[in-house]
Image 1: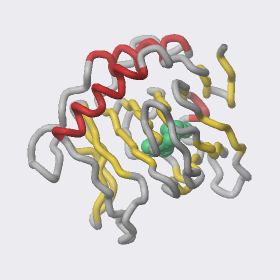
Image 2: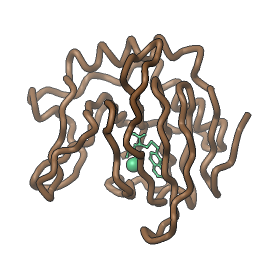
Image 3: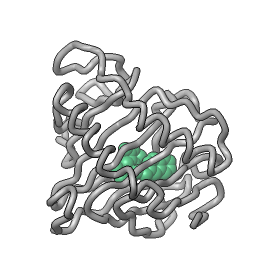
Image 4: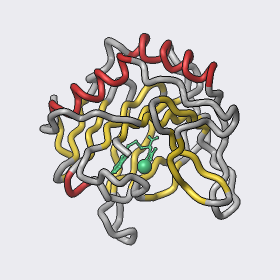
Length: 202
Ligand code: MD3
Ligand code: FE
């Protein structure tokens, strides 16, 4: 069940349902080492989404800007290694969408509580724009906004659910996208939260 959302964007519904419990366990181990935090944007706003990272590079934001860093600014230590299961999943999903040999060096982990959202944005802090991004949704469902490479084009809405994996490459790599405020809910595996793993080649 592969659904093409746009040129280069492939939704694999429920693709990682079976490994979700192990993914969540690995995620917990990562966030014991690199705890959840609410980053501040260069404009001075605190993000409603809580974040952590694993892999050789992690995405961070502060008053000075957005960037990738090899170390967690909270501890000064390297980010936790990317669990083998994460790397395997990202690689296999990318291959299924037509991108052979995807070798991500960054995994951003987002946590949404009720009301948390991600405003419309582009992911362009990476040099490897020819590489896809793989995202994995876990826990409560959310409404994903998917636009074009022009901010003013009206975005389409897609419901992303527990176990869904999306590969974003080609022309969709620079599409504006976001997440609507998370509705209240209760998920058997994640309680009141939605989690998203985003794999990138920096
Ligand atoms: C489309 N995360 O971390 S994942 C992000 O659910 C981010 O947490 C959202 O946007 C989340 O930057 C959306 C889906 C996603 C990720 C990256 C994309 C869609 C994308 C890059 C280009 C186009
Ligand atoms: Fe994004």
